[in-house]
Image 1 (cartoon, helix red, strand yellow):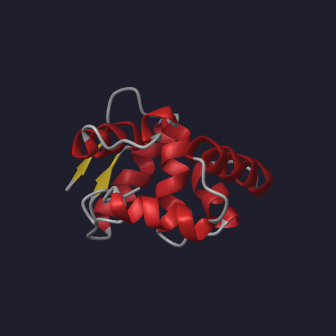
Image 2 (image 1 turned 45 degrees about the vertical axis):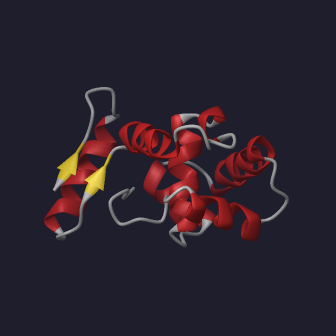
Image 3 (image 1 turned 180 degrees about the horizontal axis):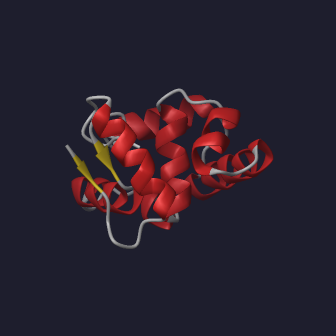
Length: 116
């Protein structure tokens, strides 16, 4: 029910174990990013410009997590999450969260098969 790559940090493995024990699926951010890119093929629209961390934050944002919640999950400050959020919007050339969410939906990032 879960997959974590060898390059994932130890806290990602711990989070994955918790998710699977709770009956949910988990795919590490680096793998879920590759899966999303493969689904897009030629219609990437800038997604390939995001780092693994930015992609992870994007998935958590569109899942409805706040900056504070994401920061706790990733062991980062809320301010750092806000900065990453800004960089994501800049790289994807969107000006607000509605546009960001529309892109995420179009790319299939809200699918339950891509869980952060």
